[in-house]
Image (tube, rainbow, N blue to C red):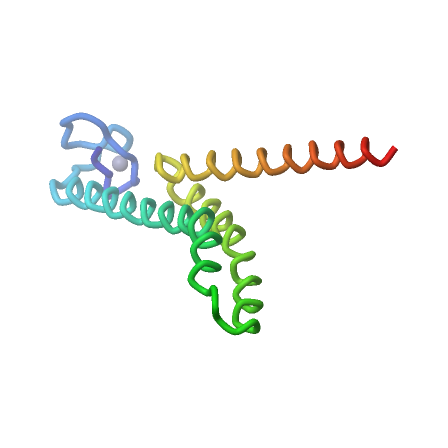
Amino acid sequence: MKECPNCKTLNTGESNYCAECGAKIANGIIKEVINNNSENENKAYYLAIIGFVLYYIAPIVIPKLLTGMPKNIINASSSFVGLCPLAAIVIMIIGRNKYPQNKLLKALMWCIIFTITISLLTFIIFFMWFMASCK
Ligand SMILES: [Zn+2]
């Protein structure tokens, strides 16, 4: 893809002139667009990995690291652990808006949706079982 310096249209193929406005497209522009894409791709992967760690790893690992610590530290960390999945969802939404093409961010989104659906279903089944056993 070559970005037109004049109208910012992305031109496909080997043409040295913009299909939209006819301006000459310099060779330097091509490199710049490719570099930006791979840089964005890296940022998107970092966001997705941070999201995965915050959602799935931090809530399991942090309490284990703190076993044996004083109670007030454990209490303070438990509220932080509760915020980790929320932070992961926020990062995922920001990432999906900024880099909608990134596959790892897409995977993160579906993993989070799947996990939330399973927990909701478990909760509903448990709630129905609880109501039935009360009668
Ligand atoms: Zn143009």
